[in-house]
Length: 460
Image (tube, rainbow, N blue to C red; front, side, top):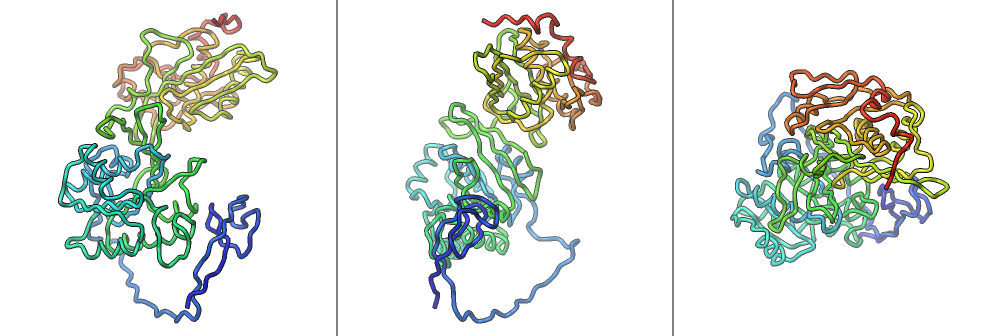
Protein backbone atom coordinates (compact mmCIF):
# COMPACT_ATOMS: atom_id res chain seq x y z
CA UNK A 1 0.00 0.00 0.00
CA UNK A 2 1.28 3.47 -0.86
CA UNK A 3 2.35 5.68 2.02
CA UNK A 4 1.96 9.46 1.94
CA UNK A 5 5.27 11.20 2.61
CA UNK A 6 5.70 14.93 3.11
CA UNK A 7 8.61 16.29 1.13
CA UNK A 8 9.83 19.75 0.16
CA UNK A 9 10.41 20.27 -3.55
CA UNK A 10 12.35 23.14 -5.13
CA UNK A 11 10.19 25.02 -7.64
CA UNK A 12 13.25 25.93 -9.72
CA UNK A 13 15.15 22.68 -10.21
CA UNK A 14 12.81 20.03 -8.75
CA UNK A 15 15.26 18.78 -6.08
CA UNK A 16 13.45 16.91 -3.27
CA UNK A 17 14.42 17.73 0.35
CA UNK A 18 13.44 15.87 3.49
CA UNK A 19 13.00 19.10 5.48
CA UNK A 20 12.40 22.73 4.74
CA UNK A 21 15.30 25.12 4.25
CA UNK A 22 15.75 28.66 3.06
CA UNK A 23 18.18 27.67 0.31
CA UNK A 24 17.94 24.82 -2.17
CA UNK A 25 21.00 22.57 -2.09
CA UNK A 26 20.50 21.61 -5.73
CA UNK A 27 20.46 24.98 -7.50
CA UNK A 28 21.23 27.46 -4.72
CA UNK A 29 17.95 29.39 -5.12
CA UNK A 30 16.39 30.99 -2.05
CA UNK A 31 12.80 30.56 -0.79
CA UNK A 32 11.84 28.05 -3.49
CA UNK A 33 11.05 24.97 -1.32
CA UNK A 34 7.34 24.13 -1.23
CA UNK A 35 5.69 21.37 0.74
CA UNK A 36 4.22 18.51 -1.30
CA UNK A 37 2.70 15.14 -0.44
CA UNK A 38 4.35 12.31 -2.37
CA UNK A 39 3.22 8.69 -2.61
CA UNK A 40 5.88 6.14 -1.65
CA UNK A 41 5.09 2.49 -2.43
CA UNK A 42 6.33 -0.17 -0.01
CA UNK A 43 7.43 -3.69 -0.97
CA UNK A 44 7.45 -2.89 -4.66
CA UNK A 45 8.28 -6.10 -6.57
CA UNK A 46 11.42 -6.03 -8.65
CA UNK A 47 10.69 -5.35 -12.28
CA UNK A 48 11.97 -7.72 -14.93
CA UNK A 49 14.43 -6.39 -17.43
CA UNK A 50 12.90 -5.70 -20.80
CA UNK A 51 14.59 -6.66 -24.05
CA UNK A 52 16.29 -3.69 -25.74
CA UNK A 53 17.20 -3.87 -29.39
CA UNK A 54 20.01 -1.69 -30.76
CA UNK A 55 19.91 -0.53 -34.37
CA UNK A 56 22.55 0.80 -36.72
CA UNK A 57 22.92 4.54 -37.09
CA UNK A 58 22.61 4.10 -40.86
CA UNK A 59 19.26 2.33 -40.67
CA UNK A 60 16.22 4.36 -41.71
CA UNK A 61 13.48 5.23 -39.24
CA UNK A 62 9.99 5.06 -40.80
CA UNK A 63 7.97 8.28 -40.62
CA UNK A 64 10.90 10.50 -39.61
CA UNK A 65 10.33 13.10 -42.33
CA UNK A 66 9.19 16.56 -41.25
CA UNK A 67 5.50 17.36 -41.47
CA UNK A 68 4.53 20.86 -42.59
CA UNK A 69 1.81 22.78 -40.76
CA UNK A 70 1.15 25.09 -43.77
CA UNK A 71 1.96 28.05 -41.52
CA UNK A 72 5.31 29.22 -42.85
CA UNK A 73 6.38 31.30 -39.84
CA UNK A 74 5.65 28.44 -37.42
CA UNK A 75 7.47 25.94 -39.64
CA UNK A 76 10.47 28.28 -39.87
CA UNK A 77 10.82 28.49 -36.09
CA UNK A 78 10.52 24.71 -35.74
CA UNK A 79 13.36 24.18 -38.20
CA UNK A 80 11.37 23.52 -41.38
CA UNK A 81 8.42 21.54 -40.01
CA UNK A 82 7.43 19.18 -37.19
CA UNK A 83 9.34 15.97 -36.56
CA UNK A 84 7.24 12.89 -35.62
CA UNK A 85 7.86 11.91 -32.02
CA UNK A 86 9.00 15.41 -31.02
CA UNK A 87 7.68 17.23 -27.94
CA UNK A 88 7.44 21.02 -28.09
CA UNK A 89 6.90 23.44 -25.21
CA UNK A 90 5.30 26.83 -25.99
CA UNK A 91 5.42 29.52 -23.29
CA UNK A 92 4.26 33.11 -23.09
CA UNK A 93 2.57 35.75 -20.97
CA UNK A 94 -1.15 35.34 -20.16
CA UNK A 95 -3.36 36.65 -22.96
CA UNK A 96 -0.50 36.96 -25.45
CA UNK A 97 -2.19 34.55 -27.89
CA UNK A 98 -0.71 31.08 -27.26
CA UNK A 99 -4.04 29.28 -27.52
CA UNK A 100 -5.01 31.34 -30.57
CA UNK A 101 -1.75 30.47 -32.32
CA UNK A 102 -1.99 26.74 -31.62
CA UNK A 103 -5.66 26.61 -32.59
CA UNK A 104 -4.77 28.10 -35.96
CA UNK A 105 -1.80 25.73 -36.31
CA UNK A 106 -3.88 22.65 -35.54
CA UNK A 107 -6.61 23.87 -37.91
CA UNK A 108 -4.20 24.11 -40.84
CA UNK A 109 -2.40 20.92 -39.87
CA UNK A 110 -5.68 18.99 -39.72
CA UNK A 111 -6.25 19.63 -43.42
CA UNK A 112 -3.63 16.95 -44.14
CA UNK A 113 -3.20 15.02 -40.87
CA UNK A 114 -5.25 13.88 -37.88
CA UNK A 115 -5.02 16.04 -34.78
CA UNK A 116 -6.30 16.25 -31.20
CA UNK A 117 -6.67 19.45 -29.14
CA UNK A 118 -7.09 18.90 -25.39
CA UNK A 119 -7.84 21.89 -23.19
CA UNK A 120 -7.57 21.76 -19.42
CA UNK A 121 -8.66 25.38 -18.99
CA UNK A 122 -11.68 25.68 -21.29
CA UNK A 123 -14.75 23.61 -22.07
CA UNK A 124 -15.24 22.18 -25.54
CA UNK A 125 -17.98 24.74 -26.21
CA UNK A 126 -15.64 27.61 -25.37
CA UNK A 127 -12.96 26.27 -27.72
CA UNK A 128 -15.55 25.96 -30.50
CA UNK A 129 -16.72 29.52 -29.87
CA UNK A 130 -13.17 30.84 -30.18
CA UNK A 131 -12.57 28.75 -33.30
CA UNK A 132 -15.72 30.16 -34.89
CA UNK A 133 -14.62 33.71 -34.10
CA UNK A 134 -11.24 33.05 -35.72
CA UNK A 135 -12.84 31.51 -38.78
CA UNK A 136 -11.10 28.17 -38.25
CA UNK A 137 -12.12 25.69 -40.92
CA UNK A 138 -14.05 22.61 -39.83
CA UNK A 139 -12.31 19.29 -40.34
CA UNK A 140 -13.16 15.69 -39.54
CA UNK A 141 -9.48 15.15 -38.71
CA UNK A 142 -9.61 17.51 -35.70
CA UNK A 143 -10.80 16.12 -32.35
CA UNK A 144 -11.55 18.38 -29.36
CA UNK A 145 -11.67 17.41 -25.69
CA UNK A 146 -11.64 19.00 -22.26
CA UNK A 147 -9.75 16.92 -19.68
CA UNK A 148 -7.04 17.20 -17.05
CA UNK A 149 -6.15 13.56 -16.32
CA UNK A 150 -3.23 12.37 -18.45
CA UNK A 151 -4.20 8.69 -18.20
CA UNK A 152 -7.71 9.44 -19.46
CA UNK A 153 -6.32 11.45 -22.36
CA UNK A 154 -3.90 8.74 -23.47
CA UNK A 155 -6.58 6.04 -23.13
CA UNK A 156 -8.97 8.07 -25.26
CA UNK A 157 -6.30 8.52 -27.93
CA UNK A 158 -5.71 4.76 -28.06
CA UNK A 159 -9.44 4.15 -28.49
CA UNK A 160 -9.72 6.39 -31.57
CA UNK A 161 -10.44 4.63 -34.83
CA UNK A 162 -7.39 6.23 -36.46
CA UNK A 163 -4.25 7.35 -34.56
CA UNK A 164 -3.52 11.07 -34.47
CA UNK A 165 -0.36 12.73 -35.75
CA UNK A 166 -0.48 15.81 -33.49
CA UNK A 167 -1.59 16.25 -29.89
CA UNK A 168 -1.87 19.69 -28.24
CA UNK A 169 -2.12 19.99 -24.44
CA UNK A 170 -3.31 23.39 -23.17
CA UNK A 171 -1.83 23.65 -20.64
CA UNK A 172 0.64 21.31 -18.90
CA UNK A 173 0.12 23.11 -15.56
CA UNK A 174 -3.51 21.91 -15.47
CA UNK A 175 -2.68 18.23 -16.05
CA UNK A 176 -2.72 15.65 -13.24
CA UNK A 177 -1.50 12.09 -12.84
CA UNK A 178 -2.77 9.41 -10.48
CA UNK A 179 0.82 8.47 -9.65
CA UNK A 180 1.35 11.70 -7.70
CA UNK A 181 -0.89 12.87 -4.88
CA UNK A 182 -0.43 16.63 -5.17
CA UNK A 183 -2.22 19.63 -6.61
CA UNK A 184 -2.12 20.43 -10.35
CA UNK A 185 0.74 22.73 -11.33
CA UNK A 186 3.14 21.54 -8.64
CA UNK A 187 6.63 20.43 -9.55
CA UNK A 188 5.86 16.74 -9.08
CA UNK A 189 2.69 16.83 -11.17
CA UNK A 190 4.25 18.81 -14.01
CA UNK A 191 7.30 16.56 -14.17
CA UNK A 192 5.36 13.26 -14.04
CA UNK A 193 2.70 14.38 -16.54
CA UNK A 194 5.33 15.65 -18.96
CA UNK A 195 7.28 12.40 -18.72
CA UNK A 196 4.15 10.35 -19.47
CA UNK A 197 3.39 12.47 -22.53
CA UNK A 198 7.02 12.26 -23.73
CA UNK A 199 7.02 8.46 -23.40
CA UNK A 200 3.76 8.26 -25.33
CA UNK A 201 5.06 10.57 -28.08
CA UNK A 202 8.28 8.58 -28.52
CA UNK A 203 6.49 5.23 -28.46
CA UNK A 204 3.64 6.13 -30.84
CA UNK A 205 5.63 8.52 -33.00
CA UNK A 206 3.19 11.41 -32.66
CA UNK A 207 3.94 15.10 -32.19
CA UNK A 208 3.02 16.64 -28.83
CA UNK A 209 2.83 20.40 -28.23
CA UNK A 210 2.58 21.54 -24.61
CA UNK A 211 1.48 25.01 -23.53
CA UNK A 212 3.36 26.31 -20.48
CA UNK A 213 2.55 29.21 -18.18
CA UNK A 214 5.27 31.73 -17.36
CA UNK A 215 6.27 33.29 -14.06
CA UNK A 216 6.59 36.99 -13.28
CA UNK A 217 10.27 36.74 -14.27
CA UNK A 218 9.20 35.67 -17.78
CA UNK A 219 10.38 32.05 -17.62
CA UNK A 220 8.22 28.95 -18.00
CA UNK A 221 6.68 27.94 -14.70
CA UNK A 222 7.56 24.60 -13.13
CA UNK A 223 10.91 22.88 -12.63
CA UNK A 224 13.79 23.99 -14.80
CA UNK A 225 14.27 20.36 -15.78
CA UNK A 226 11.02 20.66 -17.78
CA UNK A 227 12.82 22.58 -20.54
CA UNK A 228 15.54 19.91 -20.61
CA UNK A 229 13.00 17.11 -21.02
CA UNK A 230 11.33 18.42 -24.19
CA UNK A 231 12.87 18.64 -27.65
CA UNK A 232 11.94 22.23 -28.52
CA UNK A 233 11.19 25.31 -26.40
CA UNK A 234 9.35 28.22 -28.02
CA UNK A 235 8.55 31.58 -26.43
CA UNK A 236 5.63 33.65 -27.70
CA UNK A 237 6.53 37.29 -27.06
CA UNK A 238 4.97 40.67 -27.68
CA UNK A 239 3.89 43.92 -26.10
CA UNK A 240 0.21 44.51 -25.42
CA UNK A 241 0.48 47.98 -26.97
CA UNK A 242 1.64 46.53 -30.29
CA UNK A 243 -0.29 44.34 -32.72
CA UNK A 244 2.58 42.04 -33.66
CA UNK A 245 3.79 38.92 -31.86
CA UNK A 246 7.13 37.12 -32.09
CA UNK A 247 7.55 33.37 -31.77
CA UNK A 248 11.15 32.72 -30.71
CA UNK A 249 13.00 29.41 -30.53
CA UNK A 250 15.36 29.14 -27.56
CA UNK A 251 15.97 25.39 -27.83
CA UNK A 252 15.56 23.08 -30.80
CA UNK A 253 17.08 19.65 -31.19
CA UNK A 254 15.98 19.52 -34.82
CA UNK A 255 16.88 23.01 -36.04
CA UNK A 256 18.60 26.31 -35.38
CA UNK A 257 18.01 28.22 -32.15
CA UNK A 258 17.23 31.95 -31.91
CA UNK A 259 14.96 31.61 -34.94
CA UNK A 260 11.92 33.89 -34.94
CA UNK A 261 8.52 33.99 -36.60
CA UNK A 262 6.57 37.24 -36.79
CA UNK A 263 2.78 37.46 -36.58
CA UNK A 264 0.30 40.32 -36.46
CA UNK A 265 -2.73 40.14 -34.16
CA UNK A 266 -5.93 41.04 -36.01
CA UNK A 267 -9.64 40.51 -35.46
CA UNK A 268 -9.37 37.30 -37.51
CA UNK A 269 -6.54 35.99 -35.34
CA UNK A 270 -2.82 35.89 -36.04
CA UNK A 271 -1.66 36.77 -39.53
CA UNK A 272 1.83 35.91 -40.78
CA UNK A 273 4.17 38.80 -41.58
CA UNK A 274 6.25 38.05 -44.67
CA UNK A 275 8.42 41.20 -44.36
CA UNK A 276 9.09 41.83 -40.65
CA UNK A 277 11.69 44.53 -41.37
CA UNK A 278 8.85 46.90 -42.34
CA UNK A 279 7.48 46.67 -38.80
CA UNK A 280 10.65 47.87 -37.11
CA UNK A 281 11.80 50.57 -39.53
CA UNK A 282 11.21 54.26 -38.92
CA UNK A 283 8.11 55.99 -40.16
CA UNK A 284 9.67 59.47 -40.44
CA UNK A 285 8.78 61.69 -43.38
CA UNK A 286 12.15 63.44 -43.10
CA UNK A 287 15.54 62.58 -41.51
CA UNK A 288 15.69 63.06 -37.74
CA UNK A 289 18.61 62.93 -35.35
CA UNK A 290 19.05 60.11 -32.86
CA UNK A 291 17.98 57.35 -35.24
CA UNK A 292 20.06 54.63 -36.89
CA UNK A 293 19.06 51.49 -38.79
CA UNK A 294 20.63 48.25 -37.61
CA UNK A 295 21.00 45.31 -40.00
CA UNK A 296 20.61 42.40 -37.63
CA UNK A 297 20.11 38.64 -37.70
CA UNK A 298 17.46 36.63 -35.87
CA UNK A 299 18.46 33.02 -36.38
CA UNK A 300 18.77 32.61 -40.14
CA UNK A 301 16.57 35.61 -40.93
CA UNK A 302 18.03 39.08 -41.63
CA UNK A 303 15.95 41.91 -40.21
CA UNK A 304 16.34 45.70 -40.18
CA UNK A 305 15.55 47.50 -36.92
CA UNK A 306 15.51 51.14 -35.94
CA UNK A 307 17.65 52.15 -32.94
CA UNK A 308 16.50 55.38 -31.26
CA UNK A 309 18.57 57.45 -28.83
CA UNK A 310 17.97 60.66 -26.88
CA UNK A 311 20.41 62.75 -24.85
CA UNK A 312 18.88 65.35 -22.51
CA UNK A 313 20.30 67.64 -19.78
CA UNK A 314 20.23 66.06 -16.33
CA UNK A 315 19.75 67.77 -12.99
CA UNK A 316 20.58 64.63 -11.03
CA UNK A 317 23.84 63.91 -9.28
CA UNK A 318 24.04 60.65 -11.24
CA UNK A 319 22.62 60.97 -14.78
CA UNK A 320 20.25 58.26 -15.87
CA UNK A 321 21.16 55.57 -18.39
CA UNK A 322 17.88 53.97 -19.53
CA UNK A 323 17.71 51.25 -22.15
CA UNK A 324 14.59 49.52 -23.53
CA UNK A 325 15.17 46.41 -25.64
CA UNK A 326 18.94 46.48 -25.23
CA UNK A 327 21.42 45.56 -22.48
CA UNK A 328 21.92 48.53 -20.15
CA UNK A 329 25.43 47.35 -19.20
CA UNK A 330 26.46 47.33 -22.85
CA UNK A 331 25.01 50.82 -23.25
CA UNK A 332 27.28 52.05 -20.46
CA UNK A 333 30.25 50.44 -22.23
CA UNK A 334 29.45 52.12 -25.57
CA UNK A 335 29.12 55.50 -23.85
CA UNK A 336 32.48 54.97 -22.16
CA UNK A 337 34.15 54.11 -25.50
CA UNK A 338 32.63 57.19 -27.16
CA UNK A 339 33.91 59.42 -24.36
CA UNK A 340 37.36 57.87 -24.11
CA UNK A 341 38.18 57.11 -27.75
CA UNK A 342 36.11 59.66 -29.68
CA UNK A 343 36.23 62.70 -27.39
CA UNK A 344 32.46 62.96 -26.86
CA UNK A 345 31.03 64.05 -23.53
CA UNK A 346 27.87 62.65 -21.92
CA UNK A 347 28.54 64.27 -18.52
CA UNK A 348 25.50 65.81 -16.84
CA UNK A 349 23.24 64.30 -19.51
CA UNK A 350 20.57 61.62 -19.31
CA UNK A 351 20.83 58.97 -22.02
CA UNK A 352 17.80 57.05 -23.26
CA UNK A 353 17.99 54.20 -25.77
CA UNK A 354 15.04 52.43 -27.36
CA UNK A 355 14.64 49.63 -29.88
CA UNK A 356 11.68 50.64 -32.05
CA UNK A 357 8.68 48.36 -31.94
CA UNK A 358 9.53 46.81 -28.56
CA UNK A 359 11.90 44.23 -30.01
CA UNK A 360 14.71 42.90 -27.83
CA UNK A 361 18.23 42.72 -29.28
CA UNK A 362 21.07 40.69 -27.78
CA UNK A 363 23.40 40.63 -30.78
CA UNK A 364 26.79 42.40 -30.28
CA UNK A 365 26.64 43.48 -33.94
CA UNK A 366 24.22 46.23 -32.87
CA UNK A 367 27.04 48.16 -31.13
CA UNK A 368 27.81 50.31 -34.17
CA UNK A 369 24.15 51.24 -34.72
CA UNK A 370 23.81 52.25 -31.06
CA UNK A 371 26.98 54.37 -31.27
CA UNK A 372 25.66 56.02 -34.45
CA UNK A 373 22.32 56.84 -32.80
CA UNK A 374 24.05 58.30 -29.72
CA UNK A 375 26.42 60.40 -31.81
CA UNK A 376 23.56 61.57 -34.00
CA UNK A 377 21.43 62.80 -31.11
CA UNK A 378 24.41 64.38 -29.32
CA UNK A 379 25.36 66.35 -32.43
CA UNK A 380 21.73 66.97 -33.39
CA UNK A 381 22.58 65.71 -36.89
CA UNK A 382 20.66 62.95 -38.71
CA UNK A 383 22.55 59.90 -39.86
CA UNK A 384 23.06 59.54 -43.64
CA UNK A 385 19.78 58.73 -45.36
CA UNK A 386 19.19 55.16 -46.56
CA UNK A 387 22.14 53.82 -44.55
CA UNK A 388 22.49 50.82 -42.24
CA UNK A 389 25.00 50.07 -39.47
CA UNK A 390 26.31 46.81 -38.03
CA UNK A 391 29.53 45.92 -36.25
CA UNK A 392 30.88 45.00 -32.82
CA UNK A 393 32.82 47.66 -30.90
CA UNK A 394 35.81 46.77 -28.72
CA UNK A 395 37.06 48.67 -25.69
CA UNK A 396 39.96 50.08 -27.68
CA UNK A 397 37.49 51.63 -30.13
CA UNK A 398 38.01 49.15 -32.98
CA UNK A 399 35.06 48.02 -35.08
CA UNK A 400 35.05 44.27 -35.48
CA UNK A 401 33.48 42.29 -38.27
CA UNK A 402 30.41 40.16 -37.58
CA UNK A 403 29.13 36.94 -39.10
CA UNK A 404 26.61 36.63 -41.93
CA UNK A 405 27.35 40.11 -43.23
CA UNK A 406 26.36 39.07 -46.77
CA UNK A 407 22.78 38.28 -45.70
CA UNK A 408 22.51 41.61 -43.88
CA UNK A 409 23.64 43.52 -46.94
CA UNK A 410 21.26 41.67 -49.25
CA UNK A 411 18.31 42.49 -46.99
CA UNK A 412 19.31 46.15 -46.84
CA UNK A 413 19.67 46.37 -50.62
CA UNK A 414 16.32 44.66 -51.12
CA UNK A 415 14.58 47.31 -49.01
CA UNK A 416 16.15 50.20 -50.92
CA UNK A 417 19.11 51.17 -48.71
CA UNK A 418 22.14 52.58 -50.49
CA UNK A 419 24.96 52.73 -47.92
CA UNK A 420 26.31 50.44 -45.22
CA UNK A 421 28.74 51.17 -42.36
CA UNK A 422 30.30 47.99 -40.99
CA UNK A 423 33.47 46.36 -39.71
CA UNK A 424 36.65 46.27 -41.72
CA UNK A 425 36.40 42.57 -42.62
CA UNK A 426 32.86 42.72 -44.03
CA UNK A 427 32.67 42.26 -47.79
CA UNK A 428 29.98 43.32 -50.19
CA UNK A 429 30.56 40.28 -52.40
CA UNK A 430 28.20 40.22 -55.37
CA UNK A 431 26.04 42.96 -53.86
CA UNK A 432 26.98 46.05 -55.85
CA UNK A 433 23.91 48.13 -55.00
CA UNK A 434 25.30 49.24 -51.64
CA UNK A 435 28.11 51.70 -51.05
CA UNK A 436 30.34 50.05 -48.47
CA UNK A 437 32.14 52.05 -45.78
CA UNK A 438 34.43 49.76 -43.79
CA UNK A 439 35.50 51.18 -40.44
CA UNK A 440 38.67 50.19 -38.63
CA UNK A 441 38.02 52.33 -35.59
CA UNK A 442 34.92 54.01 -34.22
CA UNK A 443 36.42 57.49 -34.49
CA UNK A 444 36.29 57.16 -38.29
CA UNK A 445 32.49 57.29 -38.08
CA UNK A 446 32.69 60.77 -36.55
CA UNK A 447 33.44 62.18 -40.02
CA UNK A 448 29.79 61.87 -41.02
CA UNK A 449 28.75 64.19 -38.15
CA UNK A 450 29.86 67.84 -37.69
CA UNK A 451 32.76 67.85 -35.27
CA UNK A 452 31.90 71.23 -33.77
CA UNK A 453 28.40 70.13 -32.89
CA UNK A 454 29.49 67.52 -30.35
CA UNK A 455 30.35 70.08 -27.71
CA UNK A 456 27.68 72.66 -28.57
CA UNK A 457 24.44 70.77 -28.57
CA UNK A 458 21.23 72.76 -28.63
CA UNK A 459 18.41 70.82 -27.03
CA UNK A 460 14.86 72.17 -27.16
